[in-house]
Amino acid sequence: MSIKLVLLKSGEQVISDAKELVSDDKVHGYLFNKPQRISTAKPILLTEDASEDRSLEITLSPWVLLTKDDEMVVPKDWVVTIVEPIDSIVKMYQDKINGKNN
Image 1 (cartoon, rainbow, N blue to C red):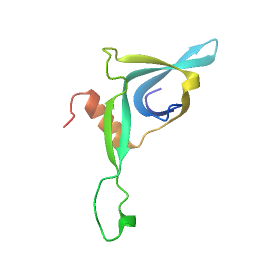
Image 2: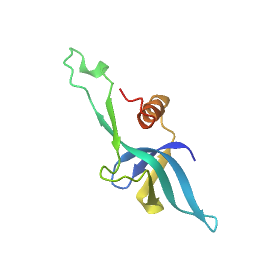
Image 3: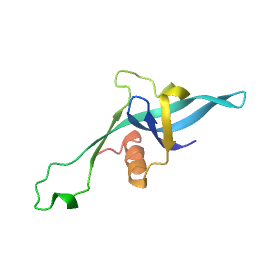
């Protein structure tokens, strides 16, 4: 695979360099390399027409905070779906894992 956005059964959205773990031509799970949890929030901004504001604040944080490991195995039954992230999220992820986080 490559950099993917993964929705987990827990409801978490994780961005990671994800690879399928295959045995006997079946996917049994996924290997996430440097996974980051995506948190979203609407910015607090008072305007006359609130329907015009469609922006989101996006934060990336380590998916599992208290580990030294960069790679984590996730069973396939914990994955709801895997999709291509939008370009701006890919860039944000790459900047973060490459130490270019502002």
